[in-house]
Image 1 (cartoon, one colour):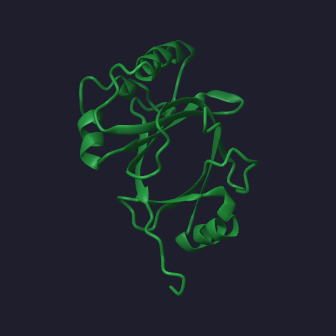
Image 2: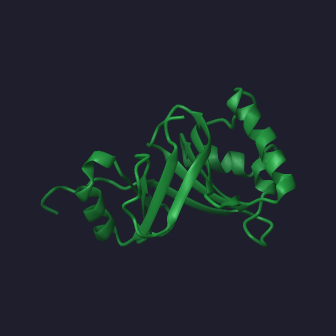
Length: 169
């Protein structure tokens, strides 16, 4: 498993870019929301101790596909009951074995919060937003059955890599 843990930081673009420049050896990924131009996330996949104070730290449970950090990002948050964990495992086992992988899905990380094993974050990298929306609205999307906290639906955010800024900008 190449990516063992992920840490996230939320904040203003300038602050996150400064953090990205401060730790170039970590290859931090700056993601920009596709629906809110002022919403940014900095993603640390270095497997090192976090340098963020956000407390958004996750451990990898499953890694599917070849590691790629370019495309349409879906961040899907959901909470599982003990029974649902077995259902998720069965779905992911199929994906890991090359069955029923959604069309256009390049890479997927299924992460959980340490000490809170029923809280999950799924980071999916898609070829395009169309591939994501086709899968998300498909009756074959078994992941949609998992809601977030008391909601029947997961919480989903959409991102893309933030474009680089010129050094003098």
